[in-house]
Image 1: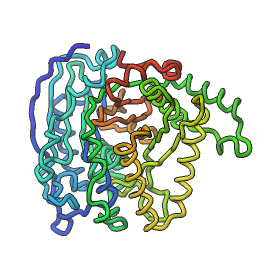
Image 2: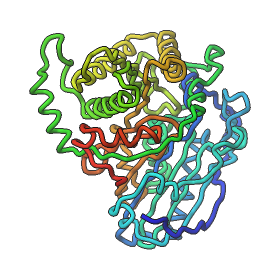
Image 3: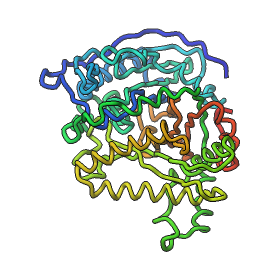
Image 4: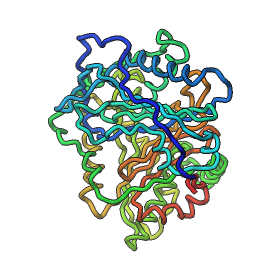
Length: 443
């Protein structure tokens, strides 16, 4: 699809509707913020508004005023990271906010298919390489289509928030827009750093190094169809029933199966490039809220996750999908069990070692292929309602390094955004297992 005719209408900084109290004007970052990649979590939410619930001006005013009110609760978003990168100056400088007019129909854009790179047309273009002390930590762009539809693109610094926190903010903003600030169901707390302060041991941000690997990254969206996943799951369980030590502990989740299919395709891609099966490390992110002895909940804003390490030795003569399912399922469940029993100090060591292991394997060990992934499938992104109903489409956007992201579509499919070296993508997207379970929505 050709680029749309888009006109920027306004650009401004939105500040909290009330000044942040002096006692709250410094917010310490945590160990997990320290370890997080210095990138942005980028999401777009599309709303096909078929009734005239508001004029365009009313929609714009509702979004701006509710955003300003929401920032009184999520006040660190309106601040700036200080130079040492260990705290946020909650100075109310504001978040970037843009409005744009799109000469086109949102439904046409979605229904006819689009490439991930085209979504960048609807995203805020704030300078991601600007100095931390002046760069807004969050930016939003509201795109008004001629049909009445709205697409909201947002970009929030991963240094201060993980996906759970971003979704918490989005639903808080949406609830404020729909019901008012007094109806906000949960007020966030900024308490992760009180349990896990930053550490001199982790002074160098390891994931920052991943941004300098060199190869050009391209992205593709693949829709793993719900019916095919369910059928595959049934076939898998018939072939490998839960019994003894030879199988997994319970039915594999849809996410585990899709992760394993993508992992196998990546290993096959590597084999075609190198001429032999190689050891491989898959690092899915695991959220920690409510899973540890530390009393941090969904209210806790910030990063609170770390990568699991699932190892494939690469010694077999033939790669089998069920083997990867077993390895991945065991690694995730073993980590969850270890986390459940771990003390705060043990969690600290597990987190730092997990990040270090992932980056060391990616940067130093040329004999092991390392892949990073995350799942947004259980986050209620499809429920973010500003007063016009739930979004008709939600999508993540390209990352600057190799990884893949899973999220649920409205009809039960799983969308995978795969970011990969441009030389490897052609082999990956023609992998037989990927072709059998998906169609690429970019083609």
